[in-house]
Length: 72
Image 1 (tube, helix red, strand yellow):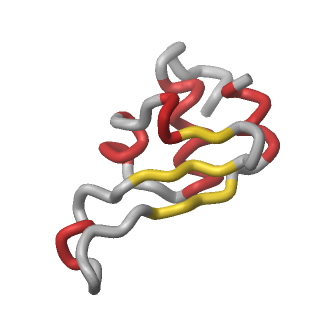
Image 2 (cartoon, rainbow, N blue to C red; image 1 turned 120 degrees about the vertical axis):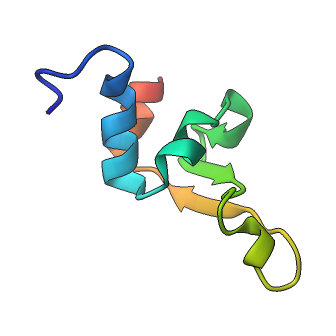
């Protein structure tokens, strides 16, 4: 897939593959959501945030080394 993907998809494909987050959540990530030192993504899932017990909660996803390398 990566060999034939357009440039903007070359980050989204491994992001979805390695983290499993929804496309809309991945598209809305900013650098504030990414911690390269800890190798984590922290974000609030838009679709399920309202259903989370105890209010809206952030999701923490540990990044595969491929993603860390991509973001660096």
